[in-house]
Image 1 (tube, helix red, strand yellow):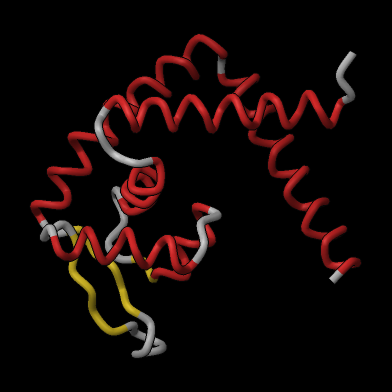
Image 2: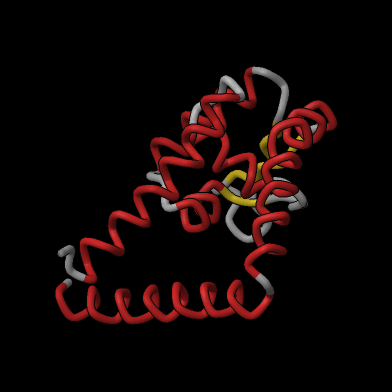
Length: 143
């Protein structure tokens, strides 16, 4: 019988695998999906903020952003507070590209959340937030 930790990691891995499979079905990689998902609906974000939101490394985010820039999907501008930081903004072409990829996924998630019901979705969000808070606190003790 799996331990609680094994069960958690199995479920976490399955969820990541589902998103990865969805990205592959759209002929994009998982990292690109995460960055577009994060940028969608935002006026601008720094690459550092994208790293925080996605859990991806700075190098991975930089690589995805560079590729999106080359394809004309994003613009980069100096940061407001720190001009060394780059603000990443979707171009009109990038918004259309993101809508083509991210909107169907958000609609799919919305249908799943409707089936689950708002109470379960709220409990899930609260539990993950609690886990993240406690894990961050424990990590602080070990660092």
